[in-house]
Amino acid sequence: MATSLGSNTYNRQNWEDADFPILCQTCLGENPYIRMTKEKYGKECKICARPFTVFRWCPGTRMRFKKTEVCQTCSKMKNVCQTCLLDLEYGLPIQVRDTGLSVKDEVPKSDVNKEYYTQNMEREIANTDGTRPVGQLGKAPSSSDMLLKLARTTPYYKRNRPHICSFWVKGECKRGEECPYRHEKPTDPDDPLADQNIKDRYYGINDPVADKLLKRASTMPRLDPPDDKSISTLYIGGLGDTVTEGELKSHFYQFGEIRTITIVQRQQCAFIQFATRQSAEMAAEKSFNKLIINGRRLTVKWGRSQAARGKEGIKDGVSEMGTRLDPVPGLPGALPPPPALDEEAPANYFNLDPSSSPAVMNIALPPPPGINPPPPGFGPPMFHPMGHMAPPMPPPMSMRPPGQIHYPSQDPQRMGAHAAHGSRHGE
Image (tube, rainbow, N blue to C red):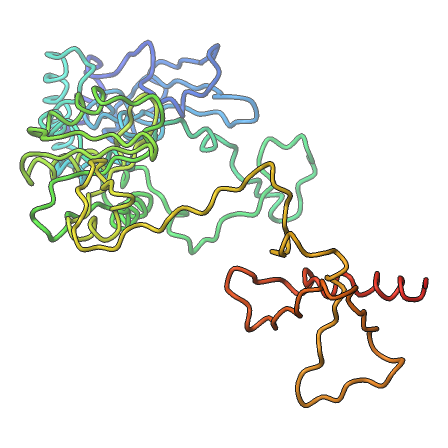
């Protein structure tokens, strides 16, 4: 009889007997009063093939029942959930996590080597508190920028929905609304996500979900440093009214010496200038798309060069940094302000001479040259000015000074034409 078979069958000290499963928040569900069934040595682990305690529960209303799939030893070796086999810290597949942390942890796949490796890992787990990962994962760095960007921060309860009803797909389901399965169109069988294997996910190979996330990580926006090596200033946007200079300094001082911090309250932004370019690059890399202060996600960009700020950032003698600039000699001065309007003077909307009589406005314009005047009785009536006090006829529109431009609807000759015509007929 093989050693593996004897130890696996008769040496029950290696069998798992747990009181509570190792689960992620998504698999556990949103019900705080969840009830579980516990079956001691109910099934064998799908990775190490050893009997373990199986837990079964319903994560919520209209959700499918879930159960643990692997033993707790295999779960602790990879720091994953016993049901979905996703990482407990980031909520990502093992392949994505190992790629982000540059970890290569190859678990043996043959029966004898797998059992020997598992027993050694159990001995290592027994010497720890059981809350931290062991093996290669325990020696890995604490975090990764790619993992922080891809990590799921909230539970995804949609993953606990029931499976699709195969009878409904064939058109033979007679349960209607009482059917516990979903009546939806199934996914495309050619879709890579339709072919997922629990062992491939655990070993970190051929995982379609991991391939999709890694492709997304390669296309995510990143902040490239500018070519101008003299730029050591970062632009911080979206400050609002709650972020102060001290809070910005307490976050950015860890990357290097800060030369100046300038806050432009009107535009709700700030400019942080570091003493060295290396410190600015490190601050931009560690803060891009990850900077959250007082619950606000802040925008981090590189500052512009001096030439670009000189062309675009200077306005009203104040630079983009908020500093006052000295005037440049030889430039033309500012335009004079418009004349102040006297509130007590009557409003003169047509730029007319105040000494003119209202009746003067009823003068008709002469016809343009080259056009014969209309015969008597046709066309607008001509109004003769009263006496010799009438001023001369106003010049045409093209000959008027710039300050006396009228719209066609505001022409004084048009405004009085009907009044003059009525007055003549009234006579």
